[in-house]
Image (tube, rainbow, N blue to C red; front, side, top):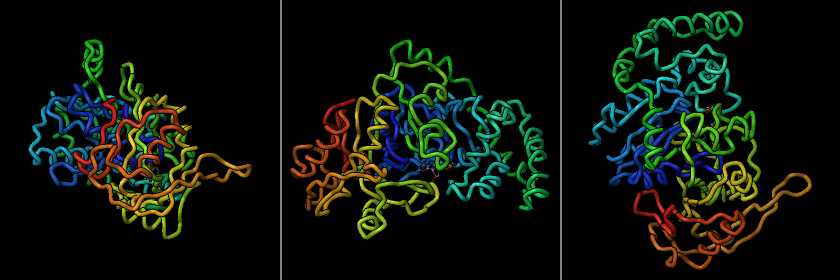
Amino acid sequence: MVIGAQWGDEGKGKVCDHLAADMDIVIRYQGGANAGHTLVVGGTRIVLHHLPSGIWSPRSVCVIGNGCVVDPQVLVQEIDAVTSGGVTLSPERLIVSEAAHLVSPVHRFLDAHLNARLGTTVRGIGPCYTDKVQRTGIRLESLARGTWADALREQAARYERLCREVLGIGFIDVEGAIRELAPSVATLVPFIGDPVPLIHDTARAGGNILFEGAQGTFLDVDHGTYPYVTSSTTTIGGALSGGGVFASLDHRIAVIKAYTTRVGEGPFPTELTDETGARLREVGNEYGATTGRPRRCGWLDLHLCRRAVMINGFTYLAVTKLDCLSGMPTIRVAVGRDGDGAPTYASLPGWQEPIAGVTEFERLPTAARAYVDFIEQTLEVPVGMISTGPSREETIVRQAP
Ligand code: IMP
């Protein structure tokens, strides 16, 4: 299981891609097109929203689990992109759960008009999960059965009066939206199925299954900085409910960026609104993979990460973007909170040498090694992997998970 220990964008895609080569199944179990996992493969930058990172590993079956919400147009665009990148995608290699929910144009419209105060990605995520929990959602099984268009008309009818008459925000052209969706639906139908037996059989036979989290611990609808959160369970429980089957999650991997970022609104105690924050944004190219929005940047908050360890039971840490901290005179790390709830910091010496692409821990400057050791000692979980650049090769593996 790979989960972000912060507010998302920790670099989970790269860590999952690294692990996928040994996986029989890779599962995305929550979220939807709000996620953006950036990978650099063979020098090309690819952003995946729906597809698990295992899509590049020929051995892995990829599953989009029942806990996900799926926008057919986005998923089909991705299928086309990876197919033109040389990946052969058959229904044996990609299974999209029939119990996952359809993100409709109605959901996207509602998100854009009602959720601006939360700074969402405007991908329809909240409204879709709202319909799911309200038991008025459209599951992907209706795509296979051919009942989706009528279900969408019904959904639109439920919201149209509210939008036009109560909120006065207009509405979408439903028939036009159905016509636009139809080709993507047709492409997707062969991939829709029930992944439960396959996951069960693989787990029982001792196969390797990777649960690939999206977003991060503090965007979890229960454990996050509510209401500035996403609408799914991004923490460990989501892996089992959204994957759909029991599997012993024996390696629980946290991905922690060497500093902190957050997109959208909400509390961020270690945020840097000064030049140092701007520098991190430029050096780390901290712009949203899905929306292109500049990410807010700040110091690493180990006080929060400690809580993420408690919630998820992490057994292994992957620290990403360590290279982006080169050149700082001093690096601060939040280790606690004072009586007013403000962060208290430890100051650690910085290092001046560029470390991009370093692949051996021993070749890091002493201060960089000390920084990693400080994370490990504070969280009491081993740092097994360190990322020193965006591409696959720019990785230090101290200990295989
Ligand atoms: P939503 O998931 O689009 O409803 O957005 C809710 C909050 O989660 C907003 O602050 C988003 O910026 C944030 N968010 C959603 N997905 C991601 C992600 O993949 N990375 C980082 N932030 C995200």
